[in-house]
Length: 157
Image (cartoon, rainbow, N blue to C red; front, top):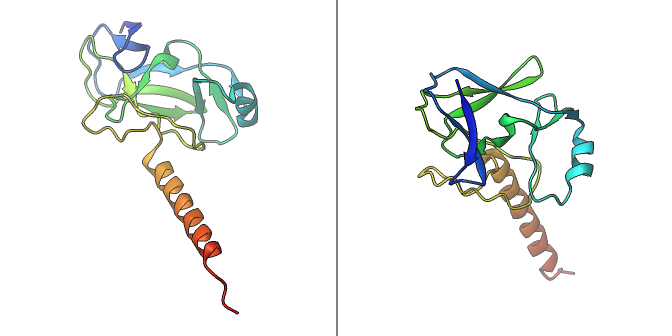
C-alpha cells in the first residue's frame, strides 16, 4: 500500500492512501523517540501543536515522527490505534478506498486547553478530547460552581 502526505481539508497536511485498504490492515506504526510525560510537558508546554501519543502504560509518550504523525483526527475515523508489545500501530477500522484520507480519533485527555475539531463529520463532537475526558471536565466545573455558590451564601449564626 502506498501512502502520501498532502494537503488536507481537515488540517494542514494529512495522510492519504493511493490504493484500497481492507478492514483490519495494519497501515503504519506511530514512531518516534520515547519520552516521559514530564519530558513531553517540559518540551511542549505552550507549543501550538504536538505529535505526542501516550502509551497505555502511562509512563511512555511517543514523540511522533514520520508518516504516522501526519494522520489527522476525526470524530468518525476510518482507522484506530492499537498497542502491541509497547508499540502503537494504526489499523483500518473499515475498508478504505483509494484516495481517502486516513483518520483516527485522537481521544485527547489530561488537559483543558481548547482542542477544537474540524473534521466536518455529521458525528463531530466539536473537540478532539474524548467523551470521557469532556464528561470529567464538566463534572469538575460543576463541583467548582457548586463550591463557589456555597461560599457566596450568607452564613447563619
